[in-house]
Image (cartoon, rainbow, N blue to C red; front, side, top):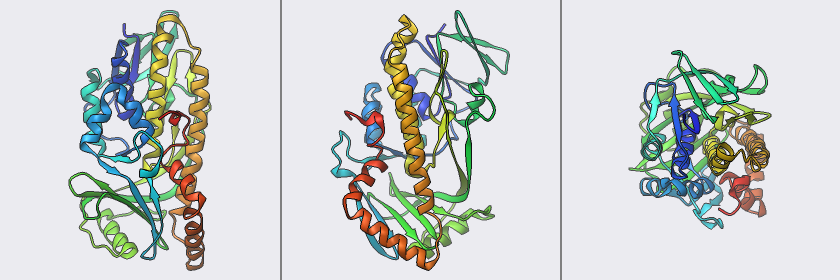
Length: 370
């Protein structure tokens, strides 16, 4: 019987399993998907998560592959409104490590215990001898504790229907990874027609994301190509673009007996800037050192504070997601001028440092000491 069963082998579940393995915890990890893939496709790993990933050895491997973004620009109408200087943060890793999620998964998979794919957990039943995870195939896996890291689709394992209030935004976005110049600088174009984000990736590629209104897009490639050209003046060939919508949800609790929930299974925030994936990583990596004393000696002294801190951080990230979403929408000419002027004034003053810290997740409670 494993000490800990991790349900879900995305970045959050793998990071937790890899960390637990280094601490000598007997951990089993299962995933309903038949193979690695899918997920949020987040690309940015922020300083607090990079620091906590050092325990498993993941940070060095990520740093060796990633583009280190030390600077960002907020732009509008062809002008720079303000610079966002991650390289001036007082942090162990003063940058954002930009890496395709597939490569992050490869790093974490190599460090975690082998994943048992195709295992769909349908129910969790707690008893005196631990937690029984019942699968769709009729298997029962028993563990001292279970951590649900399966994304929003696993929420029903822990919460009653309606217990986690979810807000569905009307906004749609188009996204693609393309070959494009621009150097290791992140650029956010806050234009009248809607936001265009351009983040560097390894091998001379960039992640492009554009606000696409509130309707379905029949041809994502054409839309994204035209939106980037119209809003930024840059012509880029687009193939393989996809579209997505966003939700906001924050669970009221993260624990039910010997079952703990982390990542998108508990809270979803806008994926802009990688906030959602990093929030989940910080959930998992601050939980890891508490699990061994809990499952071995029944010492749960740190779990109540962990839960309070993670819920507070999730609520803060959700508020930032609301602001990101509002700023990224199209605006009338007058509203666009007012928005640009306000952002220029705020970001070039004392608010610029505060915004940088918030965007880099330095205000997350797990960032203390990192």
